[in-house]
Image (cartoon, rainbow over all chains, first blue to last red):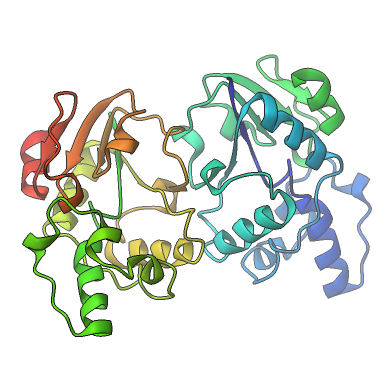
Length: 171
Length: 171
C-alpha cells in the first residue's frame, strides 16, 4: 500500500479564506481572492502574522472544498498521513489536532504528524502547497494550487487545482 | 551530516520517575525502581493511564540524567530531530513543546516532530526505548534501556544503558 503525506494548511484547511475573514473582521475591508494571486499570506493580509499566533485561528479555519470525501476514499487505498508543519505556532498544535478530530473522524491519531521541517518525512506521494516542502521529498510531488504558488511553473512537480484533480490523479 | 531521530519519553524524559512521583503523591506508596524491571509503565503504576491524560504530567517530567549535554554535542555533529509519539495524548502536545523549549533551548522548532506512528520517519540513526518504533526503522537502531525493555535481548538493535553510552557510541 503506497504511503501518501497530505499537508493541512492550504491543502485541507483554507487558510486564505480564514485570513480573509479575520482581515475583514478587523478592518472592515473585504479582499477579493483574485487580488491575492501571486502573494504570500503575509503579503496579502498585513496582520496575518498576528492571526496565526492568536488562539482560535487554526481551530476555526474552513475546509477546502471537496477534501473530505476524497481523503476518506484515499484512506481506503493508501496509507494516509496528515503532515503539518505546525511546530512554529505552538498554540496551534492542540487546535489542529481538535480540527482533524472534528472533520476527519475516520483518521486515527496514528496518522497525524506535526513537525517543523518536512525533510524527515518518508512517503511515496506528497501533496503540499509549498515548493519548499516538496523540494526535499524523494517521491511523487503534487503541488496543490494556492494564490502564493499560482504563477510558478516547474517541470518536477504535478499541479492540482482542487480535490477533484486529486481524485482524478490518485483514485 | 547524518540524521538522528531521538525519542522523548524514556530517552530524554524520565517517565518512570514521573509515574513514581505521581503514584506516591496519590497513594503514599513508594515503588522502588528495581521493582519495575520487566514491567510496562501501565503494569508498574496502576493509575498510569490516568496520569498521562492529566494536565501537567508531561510538562513536569524530569530529565533523564546526562541527556542535555550529549544532545547539545550531538546537535553540532548530526542533524538532530526529536521525534515523539505524542499524538495519542492530545493535551501533551503543547506541554511537550514547552518542555523542549525550556530544557533544550539550543534546538529549533524545525527539529521537533510529534507523531502517532514513527513509520513515516526517515533518518540514519534512531534512539528509542520501544522495539515497536525501531522495528519499522531502516537505519541504525539504538535501544535506550528502560524497565519495560530490560529483559529482552535482540541481535538487530544496539542497547545503551544511559547517555554516557550514547556519547561513547556516537561522539
